[in-house]
Length: 149
Length: 149
DNA sequence: TATATTATATCAGGCCCCTGATATTATCGC
DNA sequence: GCGATAATATCAGGGGCCTGATATAATATA
Image 1 (cartoon, rainbow over the protein chains, first blue to last red):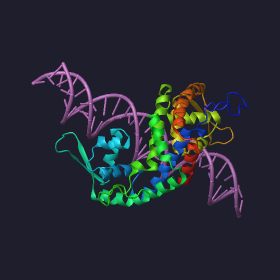
Image 2 (tube, rainbow over the protein chains, first blue to last red):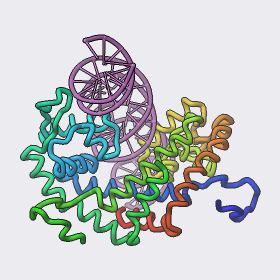
Image 3 (cartoon, rainbow over the protein chains, first blue to last red):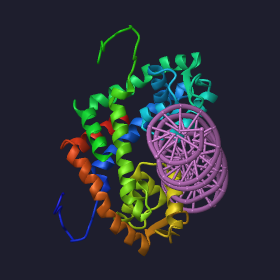
């Protein structure tokens, strides 16, 4: 609760975001995204696009809804990303044979190629982050995410 | 670094973002923002807007460039937020008396009022996050941000 | 069978973040 | 004083995230 923090006058700094945990999380995420974007720039990929391609590598033929759940974003968000990746020629989408509504998504040759090259660059970002983090950092962050959900 | 994870075939999961530290950071940040947005919804504020108002409370008369640096975003990003907050009547902007180019920004009465009410709600989010975090979490996250900058 | 519910895909619009570009003003070096 | 540099503000456009709304297909239920 952080009471009585150098109360020079009685009403200063009711809440200082600059010192909060939320602020630190935001800073870390922003630095991570920017670093990852720099690593991926040569491949013409953004960090979220890279993550979608990873999901498709792990689960070929996944639907829009499935990919959205995996990435913890809305189907609408994933939809726009898939349209973009389709236009870039990295994925291809085709209606499911049995279920009339589902659009199956797969990596193209080009998508697989780009992704395999991107993996190495992204590992660099992960390595730097891990060296600055405590061993239980990832688990703790997922605990925070869970508590706030 | 996580070698040999049930290698059914020799080339599976070259890099699994779902298990990475980067993924955990992203998850935590997203959960935090969504929770904060829910807490702020009644006041018609978003989390980034709330943070800008906090900066202005701490530093009345700050310029666009100054606010951008404080929030670690580009001046263009801050510009669009200030335009929005101005239209909402929460801030007011006026040219500096001496420096012809600088636009000084201040909270309006309404802005101060909304902000003071919002503080309490946001503390709830911070409290939940802190209870799920380790004591050195914030410091460690800023270390990660620094390493990736 | 007919209806209601659920799941999927997708359009529209808004906010936040970025890069790139431009115009204006301050300041520094000559 | 004058030109280069830097700082500030701002326009334009794209990406990723959201909510709200709509259409269609699959499934559960009365």
